Length: 354
Ligand code: IPM
Ligand code: MN
Image 1 (cartoon, rainbow, N blue to C red):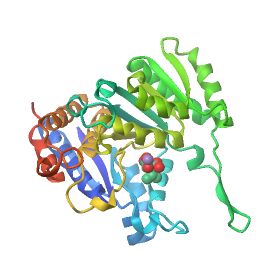
Image 2 (image 1 turned 135 degrees about the horizontal axis):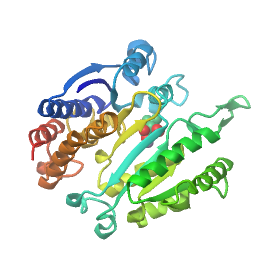
Image 3 (image 1 turned 60 degrees about the vertical axis):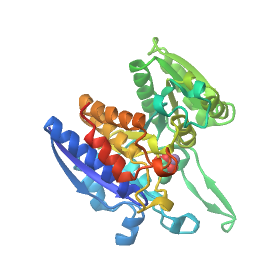
Image 4 (image 1 turned 30 degrees about the horizontal axis):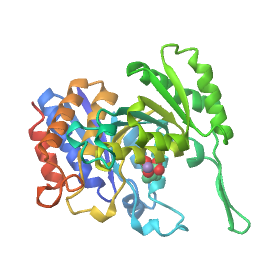
């Protein structure tokens, strides 16, 4: 197969971890005889520096013409403490999601057996946890009308969802639940929010079409508690954009490190694969960031964008082996036991054949 991949490393540790993911993709393609072509695109703060736009049209055209997008991270401290900046690196990520129509963000959460001791949660709570968070990605508060009034002294962000937006993400969630353990948890705040009541109404209507799926409804505040009180309860969790953003950071604790969580964003155009962690500017350029989330995002790319399941599995096996061996970065190992970003990447590609 010929794979045309757009690489958008972005800011902070993005370039370092995407570099390792690229190495893993190259290795797997050599072994399974695929031809791969990577084309670099600018995004985030780097794109603002070079052309004043966090998601330049040239990058968008590249994404549209590629089979998959491998994404690093965006964000820069120069903007974090400047709330009045007219342009921000994060707008690049929001624009790419919107313009590619990537309405579904899939974030699998899995407790690796070899890492259950690393989780801040009790071992018996996380051991065996394995669920999929599905976050709506192009609607809600992130994209609703926003602004200031009263001479800048009041501000608003509108949460708005249409029936069509809610229905397509819920159908996708029902489908994924059907391929897993057939248990779907719809997370909302229907006791307070009108948008949540629309979500719940549509989910209840759809239940009749998916009689083999067990559905339950959970308020987001309760879900935030249940995720750490009883993570094994969950199979597929679906929720709106902002709730999903918050809950998936929380859920990363179950795996032991934010540096392990991968994601796929799918929808109308080219799918995008991205580690859940951000730009982590304090670690940028130090070769210490955990490359596993980016490498597992590449595994998701083989599976979701190309249907190449064996290739994805080869990467997953090698990652699991590195975690078992304790060949890991400093977020998971103390002092001298820690390896660098590129050492972990090298170990993983050299061991993808077991
Ligand atoms: C994420 C990130 C982004 C988001 C930021 C960088 C805009 O936190 O992908 O979870 O809030 O969606
Ligand atoms: Mn986030």
